[in-house]
Image (cartoon, rainbow over all chains, first blue to last red; front, top):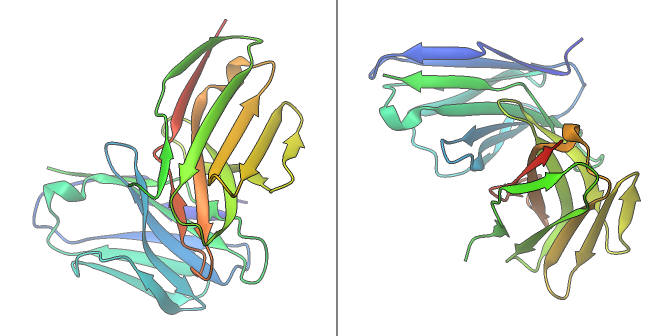
Length: 113
Length: 111
């Protein structure tokens, strides 16, 4: 019973393609996040959603579009993939009004060729 | 100046050693502080929160100095299983949960 799950775990694709990564949390949390960890291992926030509403967008190119069909899911769609998009993408969730602890998914390793 | 700075290491220590990691943060309005642990090719996991009064969890002790904007983590009696990257993490006041991560300090504990 995984708390935060992501699919796929690995994604290898060609430049120019469009791809999606899915995230689901069964913790009942209200807030979900997408982070990017690049080759230098630097982990940086991309988006945050609270109860299906976008609250943080950290100057991410508009090729990246998050979508939250309900508060348990936050998917990430990427158009026109570029080499620089290669990274590990982590989804996370946090209970609103609770502690500030965030729970991370296992990550999706994206490789753009 | 980076928002959260850490010595990247690696720190190579023998089993049983005591090792200390330091971290500085630039935003004086930061309100919450954490140490996360990340194993190779895994997701970050919360190790412990850091409080002004200092807090201890078994072999791990975390300290916060708000005046100096400095956070530390002390690991006593290192185990092989402590080998990982330790991420210093800061939450700014009113940031809607926007965690700022340091680049991490890599620890390798050798037999």
